[in-house]
Amino acid sequence: MFNFTKLKIAARIINIVDNNGHGRSTFLMSTLSHSHVIQIAKSVIPPLHHGMHKGQAGRVAVLGGCQEYTGAPYFAAITALKVGADLSHVFCTSSAATVIKSYSPELIVHPVLDSLTAVTEISQWLPRFHSLVVGPGLGRDEQLLEIVSEVIQKAKEQQLPIVIDADGLFLVTQNPDIIRGYTNAVLTPNVAEFDRLYERVLGTKQDPSEPIAMAKELSKQLGHVTVVQKGSHDIITNGDKVLVCSEEGSPRRCGGQGDLLSGALGTFLFWSKQAVDSNNKSCGIDQCGYTLCAAYASCSLTRLCNKMAFRENGRSTTTTDMIAQISKAFITLYEKN
Image (tube, rainbow, N blue to C red; front, side, top):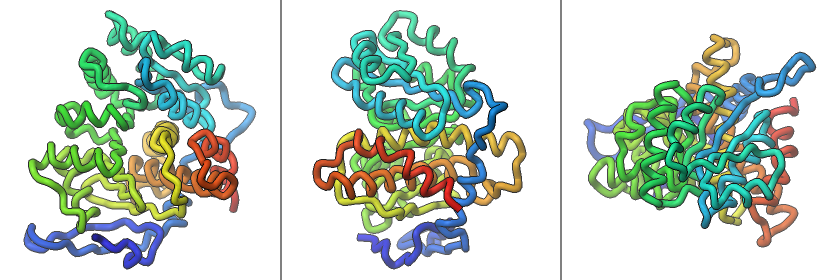
């Protein structure tokens, strides 16, 4: 098993050099520290001022939510708002809509995912959004997966940043070409999801003793799509560069944490891409790339929320407790000097 403590750092940009293309890998680390990456993330967050109008800080859409799974899309969408997006939409099945609406009046819920005109209706909204989160509470109904596949294609045509998690990853595992080569996408697999996706794409099982090399290789084979391999340490790579997020969390692993990460990532992806699009070179985002910056910022925030919630609730910690800590965690990471 790979010993992360040997890194002796919270995070680094890592270039991985394989010895003659085979065997164990050599890791060459740059000088980008955890605090440096956090500083880059701070610089892409839009400052609040009285001249802003609704929507400027982010309009995020979540694609997911079915009869069985209504909590996940709520967790992702409400997190996007609490991190700082102005508007958060959920596109779900008709059977899930009323339930999701009842969780929060702040969310805009569209009960269209299982309609005959779903692709057309959702596609009409895409130009209004800054990012798309695919998968929370989606389920594995074949008809829904086909609809989502078509929506992803429409989003790609508009160069919309896309986060893919949960059953969205099941869809990608079934057909990796859906996302292959689309570098505005971020995949967020847990250990089991990563194993299945790696085996599907590379045709072999991964080597658990080389997690960084495996994550990097998967990203490369997918055409440099950013991969966030969630675990005791989050490995974030675009196939060329790697960030390892070791922000302290807690031993508690409650259902829904990944949805919190996906929602946060939806917001941070827009902020980071906005910095790139505005040619804001002073922020330093070119040192790691906008998808890696957004992913690292979101992983750090999720882990700190988990730590803060566990401090208060211990073994009883749930994702709802973590969401309640977003404000404090965000201030601690991104608004304190």
